[in-house]
Amino acid sequence: MRLNIGCGEKPIPGWTNIDFVPTGFQDMVGNIETGIDLPDACASEILLDNVIEHLESIPKAMQEIHRLLKTGGTVTLITPHFTSLSSWRDPTHLHHLSYFSFDMFCKERNTHYLGGRLFVTIRKRLSFGGGIMGLVGRALFAISPEVYERKFCFIFRASTLTVTLQAL
Image 1 (tube, rainbow, N blue to C red):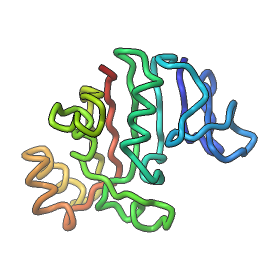
Image 2: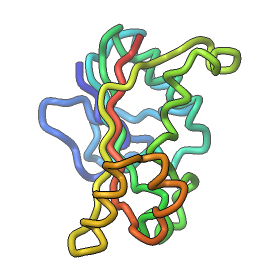
Image 3: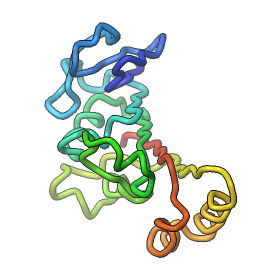
Image 4: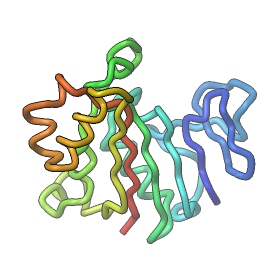
């Protein structure tokens, strides 16, 4: 089963489309933070496209995603990078996320409040706009993502962060 969680008005054919607001576009109503009425390990793939930044508790959502995923299943999270203007323009965004924000779910040192290491990172991608500023931003990021975010990110702004994690 493939779950498109937070589908809004953009269902994906062939996926189970879920949203907590009954819009008529979803296959079922469910809330990733409070639990979705599906069995454990039922999904091979989960997508949250511009959803995670709206949630009150990202750790609770990630625990529920882990519960829903089969071992080896993947979740793809798409969100504005914290330097993107779109991250700040929407007043319903509760979180402004970094290239490194989801690393905490992949580290042993966070097991005391997550209940264990949940995921391994498969892919992380940070996209940039066009023009000279985008080119310079991409170049600086390619040299060192950490230095880019620490020193240059508000000069050479990124746009979209895409992270794919695999359930352990």
